[in-house]
Image (cartoon, rainbow, N blue to C red):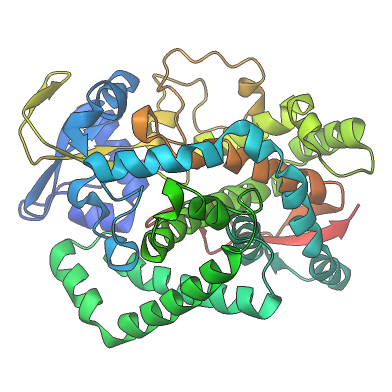
Length: 439
């Protein structure tokens, strides 16, 4: 990560220019220059940046009730409404209580073989790509793969034509919402998006497809998919609208985040053949030729260390925003009601004060990792609103990695080094271009 030494706050716009150009580097630079708990200005708004583990714990856990989602989720509300990710108070508490059992480790471990099965459905297309010897952009492949896995878990098996239509509508809607992710005028931009005829048409299509799939999935047993599970709760009093809202946000949270993390993983392994070889050797030693099962998860420590190192370097949720309710203190700063607080796993995970060789790709650090603080490493957030997928995402990544690493070597395409491009999530730009070589 380069340091933007030429960056300076503008007298009128503050850090808006550098932030829009390179948000991750700008936040890291501000924290290094001004401290781990500090303020910075974007146009007319002053924000509080918190990157010390102690400060992060204060915001996300110790005083979580004082730091709410508030207006920070206005980006996705035009599409998803009130749900477990966007709501506060009793509405959030209800949905967290209802959804949490579906994401317990024992239930998810029973889904490992399903995840592996979905990965195998993608192998014929990847084999064809490998046989041509041409560069392949793995990022759209990982997006399609992770979407296929999460829809299988949430909705059950879908006919290919329905999955493709649903995938297209969902991606188009999210692409439109990304336009307001870092607008300096989010309320005006949100209003413009909501009345934009194109967005309304895309949203209408997505809602119609979602409702159709919910109706079909709800006929399964409660153990088959999440929609059927939700139908079984609260004596069947949950409405289709409520299910749609939860489903859409779970698809968002469980799709791009995992896909981009996997994309970064292949980008790094393609440039670290020694690490890739060690992963392959461990997977073959444990699994041989058979697929991954739940019983194998704890027997792959180096592979899991590689996944954790990618989560450290490239946390998909690179910032977490909160709005303060009442006056408080974070470290030396007094926080007034209505202030916007920005917590950044990306910055904390790359702090030279917290990590040895923070910019290096060094998976071995996680083989005997002992966190100096609970929020030393927090790729899934923390506190009562910790991501529901903190167990699911690493399992899904293991299913993908253990399947593909034994089948292909990834050779990086020279001159195409992906760079972080953060919008809602931290994506590699312009993609992850590799050549696939059959092992």
